[in-house]
Length: 335
Image (cartoon, rainbow, N blue to C red; front, side, top):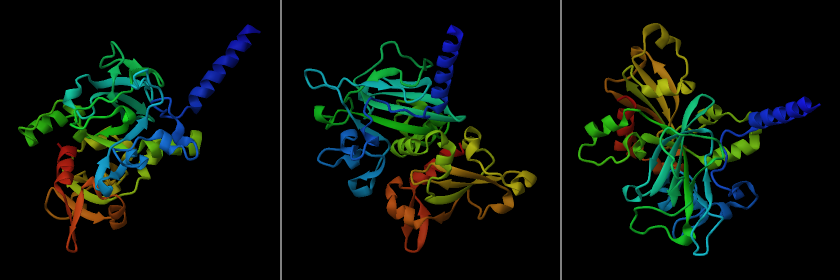
């Protein structure tokens, strides 16, 4: 009957794998999902409550965007330094690592590439005290595998104190594989120490919301549904048939019979507050208003009031206009 026992173990492993959440917590700290546990999970900025460690418009009175979660350490050595293992949030490969903390306010940090439901996703782990010895770009990692040690490295003048030691964790989509070339042309004279993994080329999702949705929906959670359900801040159009975002993330592209028949002359993009295109609609030439390369069609004023820190639009008098950050993003999307 040994074969039956082995079959049962294998079946259990298969079921566990099938039931696993797309993203797991990147450290042993899981207080987020315990009632009232947020203060044990998040680290706030100096003199601010734990909410300033969340994702979104949580700093400078809502005007400053925080791209990820600041997760509190649980383990310290005899000198009070953090010791928590940092774990891969999903199976994937090492896409980028920075072991020179002076080059980034993220200090030592690591980026992993994943395929979740066929969607290319990147997780970022920052302020690390150290990366796992021997880890290099291209290495495969399993979900839950140790990749680094939590720390407090950064190149900021203020630094990170021992009591605020934390893991800064992000879940991102990449805008354009040609970012480095775009940077050299559009931002001449501005340093780019991180190639295509420059922060301008990463658009974040809210990991807290994802962890909570996974816990609520279980096996019914779908990343693509989460993406499509994000509130839209602004609707814009861009001219030109070249939109690498549409090719990279076809799950976010909606069909349009008119563009199918007449050819794609541009796209309508529905942007979340931080610029993430959560819905993409190909448009034929006659469906594109105006003559410029980009055009702002609509702004969700309620969403802007709730989350203004993306700095995409501004209202002058009665007219909404695109801000330079939005213009740069649309230019990068179509580069």
